[in-house]
Length: 319
Image (cartoon, rainbow, N blue to C red; front, side):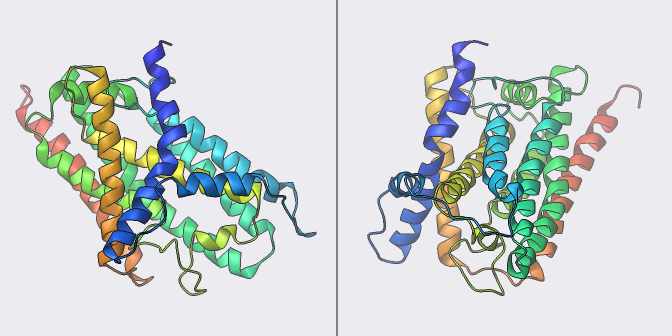
C-alpha cells in the first residue's frame, strides 16, 4: 500500500461534512438568506459529541450498536472506492460486490436500531427505507455491471469487478464510443444517489411531518454522540456515492495526480451544489411516485447493460 492510496479515505473522512454545508448554503442562496457557515456541520458534530446520551429502558444493545456499526460500514466502503487517479487502499477482484454489501449492512443495522425502540413511528420509517433501498440497489448494481463490461472491453481481459480496476480501465479508455452507456448509468446512479441519501425528490431531510418522514424518523430516539455518528455517517454516505459517480462512471484523467485530485474534489462539490439546486426548485414526490422513479432508474441501467453487451456481440469477430 503506497502513500497515494491513503488519499481517498482521508479526503472522505475529512471533507465529507463539507458537502452537507454546500447543500445548505446553496439552498440558502436560493431562498435569499445568508444561511449557515459552510463548516456548520463540523460545529454541530463537536457539540453533539460533547453531550451525553439517554437510552430508553425498552432498547437493547442493538440500539446502541446501530450508529457505530453503520458508520464503520461506511468507513470501510470509503476504503474500497478509488478517488482521482489514486487506487483504493483495499481493492481486489469482486470488491464491487463487497462495496454493495457494506452499504447494505449500514442500512440493515440502522433499520434494526429503529425497530429496537418498539416505536410504530420508527417502524414505519424503517419499512419505507427498506422498500426504497430494495428498489434502488438493482439500479446501482446493473449500472456498475454495465461500466464493468465497458472496462472489460477496454482492457480485453476477464470481467473486472473491482471499482479500482474499472476506474483505471475507463480512465484509460476515455469513454471510447460508449458515451450513451455512461450517460444512462450516470443518470441512473444519480437517482440512486438521491434515494440512498434521502434527498429531495425522494425524501426531505428537513421535514418532521409524520406522513412524509423516511430516513429522519429512524433517528428520532438517538441523541448526543449517537446522533453525531448518524449525522457524520450521512455525510460520509454522500461522499461515497458521489465518488462512485465522479470517479468510476465519469472519470477524467489529466496525468497529474494533484490536478486529478482537485478535479475530483471540485466535481463532488459541484454535485452537492446540484443537489442544493434540486432541493430549492422542486418539492418532494408523492410517496407512490418514488417507486416509479427508482424503477425508471433500474430501467436505464438495464438498457445501458443491454447496449453494452449488444454492442460487444455486434462487433464480435465470431459474428
